[in-house]
Image 1 (cartoon, rainbow, N blue to C red):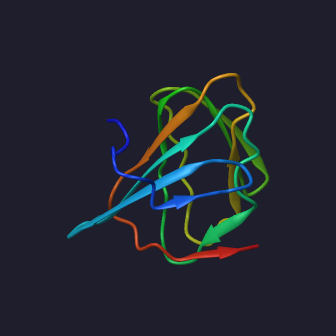
Image 2: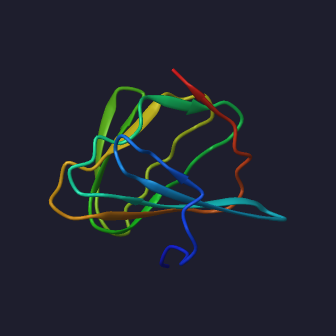
Length: 110
């Protein structure tokens, strides 16, 4: 899996991560690139959805409900609806993430 060649649907101007969204009958696939040494987004939560991001390449750190998860290629973390979480990439290489369909996207900071 590689990210789309079209421009990203969402870019974090502070941390530089890029996200692509693809909607179909089963939900929304979210693909992302997180640059090396990126602080990532602030703590946030999806109120009605579950996320199951999988690292495609590189390494990334997820903080989910206060627990730290260090992930590498093929690793997945489960994020239940309403759970505060964020990610960051403190490593020397870019990371690519794939979050499979089945999501209703509803994001709220905090």
